[in-house]
Amino acid sequence: MKLQLQPTMKTIILCASIAGLLTTAANAANVTWQAPGTISGAADVSTAGTLYGSWAPGDVHNPDVLPVNGVNFLAFGTPGVNFGINGANLNLDHYDGFANPNTANANYNFIMQNSLFNWNNTPMTLTWNSMTAGDTYLVQMWLNDGRGGQSGSSTFTGGANTSASVVIGNGAPGQYIIGTFVADGSGSQDVLISPGIMLNLVQVRDLTTVPEPSALALLATGAGAIFIGFRRKNLAI
Image (cartoon, rainbow, N blue to C red):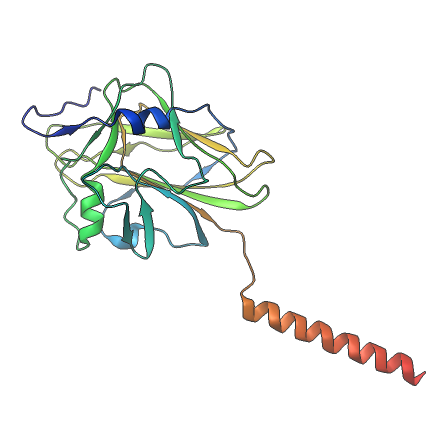
């Protein structure tokens, strides 16, 4: 399917930023995909675990950071996470005139009007890295083109697993997809998007449990009490 843009709508070319997105494919752990969800409100945005990195399209007209459901989405991606898109015969552009999904959250609506899209609709691979090997991560990605006459869908593949089709909208809100995986020794991951129509938003979250400071303090206190009790017992013998 060819994503047709109406000639009366504004297209923004981001040559420099797009060049920065073209990277070498990373690694592909098996991703366990959930069923796609239809964009409906800020609660779509997962807050499980802790935020590892986020990515949103950005240009001189868009804010660098927009929070949705307490998650800060960064234009061009979180530094150090190295989000990138690569693939053969890509023709990438940034468009800011997609129909918003009319949720109750202004920031969410604004972000969903923006997307990186591929004129050629060839498969494209989203990559990121610097994760902790052995940690469990969640990845969430959005597609949205709510304008009429723009039907289309993509699947997402991580390792051996491919998601159900995620629709872009066509006169209605688009959809998002969530997957989980365990980072391997490379600390890198890639997800194949096919066909590579567009990408509105991405977040990656670390689901591996990290003890709260209060819990660590309690453990330390308990360990200290055990040590003191053991020492007193030995002295009494």
